[in-house]
Image (tube, rainbow, N blue to C red; front, side):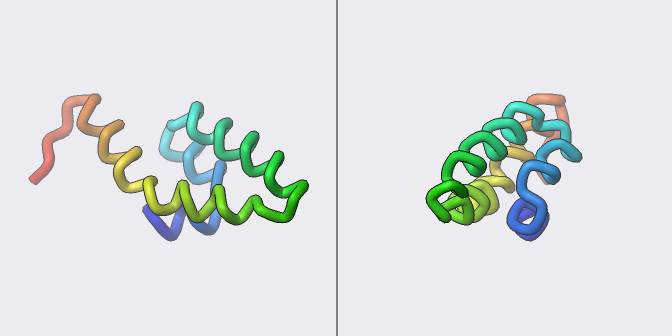
Length: 65
């Protein structure tokens, strides 16, 4: 998940069904790219992406092993 979020950014979150995070990633990244700091958003989301995706699946009823 880390690598997917880092390489593909908002597209990764769209693929896993997290539309809100995809839009937030895109909007904040677009704003910060105007100051050449958009890479910070992608690194930040890449770090927290495993937690975001695992919480999504836990809310849907899946259980951790």
